[in-house]
Each structure stands twice: as C-alpha cells, then as structure tokens.
Image 1 (tube, rainbow, N blue to C red):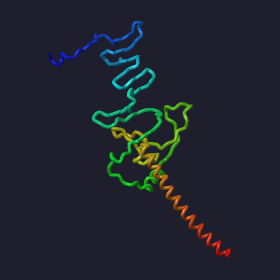
Image 2: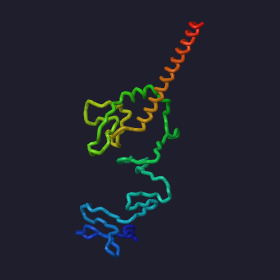
Image 3: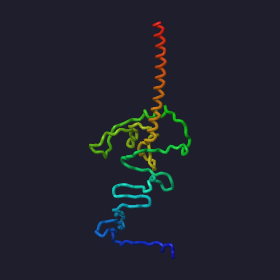
Image 4: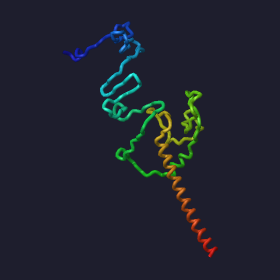
Length: 210
C-alpha cells in the first residue's frame, strides 16, 4: 500500500457550495462550506469537544481538566492577544528573577521625571456612542510627524512588525510606583526638616521662657 492510498479523500462536486449534517427533524448540526472560492465557512451548531477544550454555544471556552489555557506561538513563546474590554479576577505578570538578565536597581528619580513628562488627555474613541463615559489616558501620537502629545518612547508598545500599537501599561504602572517612591523620599526629607525646625523652635521658646 502506497503512502498516498493510506488517506481517504472526500471530494465535493465542482458546483456544490455546502455539505450539511442534519438530524432527523432537519435541524442543522454542522455545515461544511465546499465552494471553490472559500467564501462559505465550516459551521458547528452544537457544543464541540476538541481534546481538552469544550466550546459551547453560549460564548464559552472550557478547559475540562481545569488547567490553564495557553496561547502559544509556533516555534515557542506566548502569542499576543487582541481584545476589547477584558474582565478578570486577577492579573499576573511574569516577573521571576530566573527569567531575567541585566537586573539593576531602578533610578526612581529618572522614572518619576519620565512619568511627570507625560501629557494626559480626555477623549472618546471614534467607535464610542453617546452613552460612553469620558476616557482618560496618555496618547500615542501616530498621526503627527511632530508629536503633539508627549509620551516617552519607553512607555510605547509596538506590534510584531514594529508599528505603534499602544501604551505598555506594565512599564507605566511600575514607573508610577517609582514616582510614588520618589515622592515618599521627598516627603520624608521634608518631615525631617520640619522636625529639625520644630526642635530648634522649642529650644528657642525654652530660652525665652526661662
């Protein structure tokens, strides 16, 4: 038996556009587009099990063994995911020291300076309707050659082709944390000066009252 004969091919008629699987009452279970142009999709109208995944008709993907769901790239690594609003119960960023290199303590003053240079704007997306709430964030200026909105490049995310994609919230969040730490240093210094001035004032009052 040749290798080619080990496969079974089901060939559609040249003029057909669909193969349909229906139950005894005529209700469609699955539709297989067979048109040459490829315009007709493959449709399943029942819940579907694929390995460990269960896909139902209520917009839900289920991992049967309750394990994590991974989106991976061919060749290794995690794939980028594009979505609208994301509702979640926890957000975890991989920050293990074992996967990092060139680790150095951050200069909080430097990052605070970058954060304070950001132009914030209120706006609405062009796809928003009249009921959408007012939005607030920094702006990635992908329109003007001479940028009208200040946002340091370190906070800008790019896609796999190097095109401007949006704001890297992970870097921005930690830079904001650095800003808080830097401000706390300044507050502690001011408190130290105030305590020193208060001590001097108390001594002066003691001398005047003595």
